Image 1: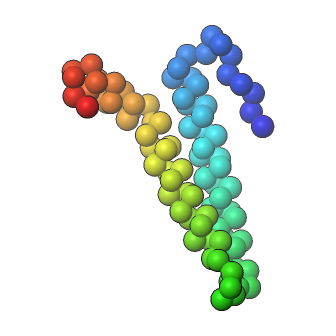
Image 2: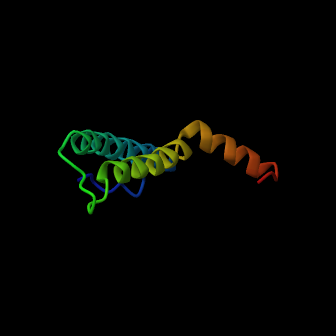
Length: 84
């Protein structure tokens, strides 16, 4: 779907692009969850797929937050000071 970043792209640029892609995936999963919530079901022998989608969104949200430039800058600053 998206082009590979150029070898000369800065790390910040690559991370920002990947973060935006994850945000798009999160939005698409939100649409899917809404569609699943308003369908007939789930039946007793069928999992609730909307709950699974919400769990995936939760994992994505954590990754998106950790890829945030401000968060990364703080972690790098802490690492340079010897704090883990």
